[in-house]
Image (tube, one colour):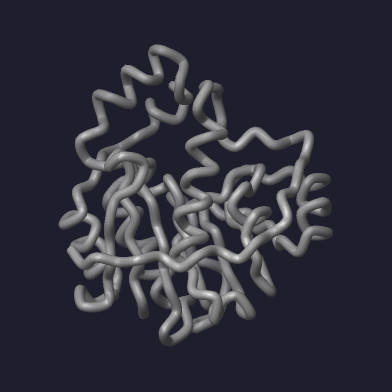
Length: 218
């Protein structure tokens, strides 16, 4: 595992919205943890990329990360779409696209389209076959030197998260949908099968080693 010193994120305007429920279900720490993921992803994006296009896959009906990151063009992908709310997001420079990661076989964009693709707290919700197919698609739509950034709970947190769900600290609905948890070597292996090379993958932990991040350059 390589060490990495994240850059400081640019200052961006915080957007409030009455539909600001960041995940399905409820939990006292859900909003806090979502903000931590958003902050971590923002730190991993070099300033030089922010004049391009970013896609956040599995962004949720309230795309917290996209609303709080500075980018020229923003695209949110999720299987839950609210038509009226999508127009509000468009007014905030976010193009919301319907996309079911387990059902759709391809991302509806041409090759080499995006500068950045993010996948935040999504990896653990997908079957291995769906992850491999999705990573291949992400690699395809990324530009040369484009970046893929992901977060997922650390492999050792499975029982801890179940306990937190029982205490209503995190969403039990979300935790029940977790398919598996990944170690950093397993994440790197998945990224390699998707097309990325090991030498271009960086990784680490955040939130007291409870979550893992990875950044891969095409």
